[in-house]
Length: 163
Image (cartoon, rainbow, N blue to C red; front, side, top):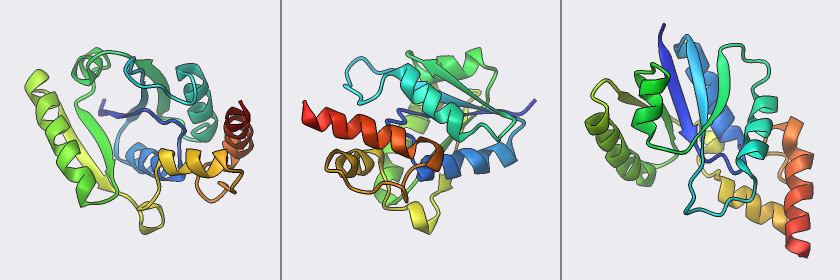
C-alpha cells in the first residue's frame, strides 16, 4: 500500500490545506492527516478540536484518516508505514524551510521522501494566521475555510477576542 502523511498544525484547517489533502488522496492509497502537537506553540484550538474540524472537512474522502502526533515526523511515518510526506508550498519562501525539514526527515528516516505540491493560485496567499486574524476582528472567513466548519471557527475566535 502506498501511504502518505500530510502533517501540519492546522490551526485551523484552511481551503489551501484541504486542496493539498484532496490532491494527495488521489495520488496515494492512504493519506494520514497528522495534526502536530507542539508544546512550544500556543494554538487557538486544541488538538482534538483541530482533528474534529479536519474530520468534518475530509468526511467525503474515503482514503484519508486524521490522527495526532507529538514526536518526530520521521518516527510517526515509520509507525504508519508511510514512505512519503506531502507538503504544500505557497511561495518560494515556504520552499527553503520545507526543504530543510525534508532533508532532516530523510536523515532521520532514510525511507521517507517528501513531495511538494504547489498551492492553487486561489490559495497562495492563504494561511491559518491570516484566517485567525480576520476572524478575531469579526471579518468574513467563508472564502478561506471549509464551509462545514466556518461558523465554528468564527464563533470561537471572535469569543477569544472578547476575553
